Amino acid sequence: MWLQVNGQRAYAYTGGRPFDPSRPVIAFVHGAQHDHSVWILQTRYLAHHGWSVLAFDLPGHGRSDGRPLASVEAMAAWVLAALAAAGADKAMLVGHSMGSLIALDAAARAPDVVERIAMVGAVFPMPVSDALLDAARDDEPRAFDMINRWSHWGLYSPPSCPGPGFSIWHQNLQLMKRQKPGVLLTDFAACNTYAAGFERADALACPVLFVLGKRDMMTPPGASRPLVERCAAALASRGLPAPTVVEIPDCGHAMMAEKPEAVLAALREFATRQLKQAA
Image (tube, rainbow, N blue to C red; front, top):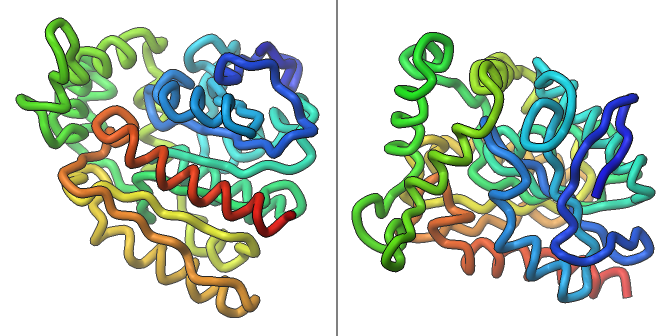
């Protein structure tokens, strides 16, 4: 699905079904050096089981025009503009890694639009090591190798090689390679410098889900606790339930590929709860 967002052409995958804003909307936001395709397995199911789906390519990523945006705040504003361009008055936001910060920021600034958020592989702060920043600047192939090694838990055994001729490692490598040069450094710098996470958490007024990989080396579950606790305090102050936290065993940072069914189950249960509460 093509949209015009801030005067530029933007792409959103709709899960193989026409987008209908009159149905419950779930919008997906990818992480650094990725695009909509990381969500294929989850979005396609949800689009065929009662939801309208938008999986965005952020500016400069995938099929979307423009240059990559330099801050999480700018990306959050863009996501809200993309929802409006699609005719979605309300939506649940799902974000992975950098996308989780974007979802958090968007929910805090537009509580009338964002009904609930799911943060997948989320921590705050989200620092990027100097070694990885240097590689992203000077040697992208080396940065891709580092990301792959730190993102996947079952690297040399299933599910990384679930069948002959299929490798999650090489799938992610090809996805990163097809992004434009310089995107990775811009994305990592945005994560590294984002400072408003706790402030945005304090402003939350909607249900929250955390989906964490127990073997995640990029955003370890232990490092997620301060953000979970900050969200819980904000929600409690507004009489809302504490965040739901789902930890997926034997799973790294690339959990949508490593454990797609577990990620889908967590998202489906969370989204279904919204439908039941609205009924």
